[in-house]
Image 1 (cartoon, helix red, strand yellow):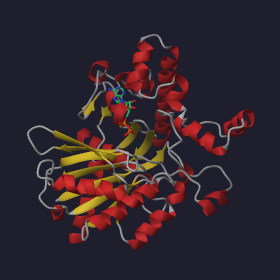
Image 2 (cartoon, protein in one colour):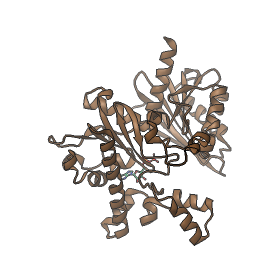
Image 3 (tube, protein in one colour):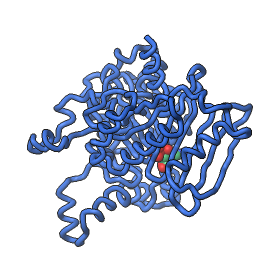
Image 4 (cartoon, protein in one colour):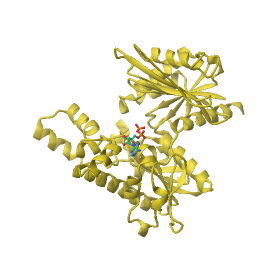
Amino acid sequence: MIVLVINAGSSSLKYQLLNMQENKVMAGGVVERIGDTLGVVTHKKLTGAAPEKFVREEKIADHRDAMHLVADLIIDEHAGVIKNKDEINAIGHRVVQGGEDFRAATVIDADIKKSIEKNNPLAPLHNPPNLMGIDVAEALFPGIINIAVFDTEFHQTMPAKAFLYALPYEFYEKMRVRRYGFHGTSHKYVARAAAVHMDKPVDELNLITVHLGNGCSISAVEKGRCIDTSMGMTPLAGVMMGTRTGDIDPAIQRYVMENTGMGVDEMDTLFNKKSGLKGICGMNDMRDIHDAGENGNQRAKLAVDMFTYQVKKYIGAYMAALGRVDGIIFTAGIGENDDIVRAGVCADLSGLGMELDLEKNRGRISEPKALHTPESRVQIWVIPTNEELQIAQEVVDILQAQKK
Ligand code: ADP
């Protein structure tokens, strides 16, 4: 079974073609700078002995152009991995915000598109391009089934006490103001993969999944079901991130606006693009921040201290929420690659049953690996995330259920 996974952003389109019999990526890539004077597509063919990279620069007017390029590349004589686009069995689309309407992956039809559109106000930067990707795929691959997989679906199992904000209740009733959570596909993937490596069914495990990338979120997963997560109504909430504040006192907004004359849009940019690690030390990539710290940059050291402290506090909170924790699972760019952050987060938690083996923790980790000492009551793992594989797996599950 061959599944094409599409992740359409506002000016980019990421894609992967997966052979699901073998759980293998056949090709993948990204089309960037859609709508600019010069766009670029970076395509990787992964079916040969070694990966082959193809880069093309040309004007890519819109998502339709971008998807045409992808369709051409995957059947291209040199860069391609299939002969005909009819070999694709289904297309899986990442959709960021499914609101309360979607608790699982869903076959897309006109009504489903309307329901996705209804949630656009909750994710104005993400859902419209996701929908555009769906429209273009439908036009370009007629007769092939399209399935939406939502970033929010894994978190829909949260109880009301975890997803409600302490605002007047009608804000939830009338405007659906609540915690939705994001990165759900990643949390779900690593929770399930961790269970396989911990050699226990996921519904017998309590896990804290710690996704630390450019965006960061932490989830409490009880017996395979999410019961709480750090991101909120939008991805701005939770721990501080590369450029986002994470949780701050909401009264800061008014105070800063009154003192600077900044407007609502400027505040939005401040909180989303100029804060987090970048706000503290001027850099948002952890590699640069560590380098600067080693060269004596005190702000860079402070940024790392703040970051690890905030992640640690969420782990403590979710340990309390779960009562018993079997595993802490680190994933994504920082979670997989950054031993300094992992060590900082796990430091001094032996009182809570977590003991990191500093030797096992050393360096970048690209395969699932246990990092705890034999004495540690709570297991500590790195599980590299694979959102595309999770999306493709959900697509396959739907196709197989349809056959029954
Ligand atoms: P995204 O949220 O965009 O998918 P990723 O999960 O790819 O992000 O994470 C990107 C971040 O991971 C980078 O900004 C950087 O901070 C961090 N990162 C990547 N490689 C390393 C590394 N070797 N050491 C420390 N941090 C790293």
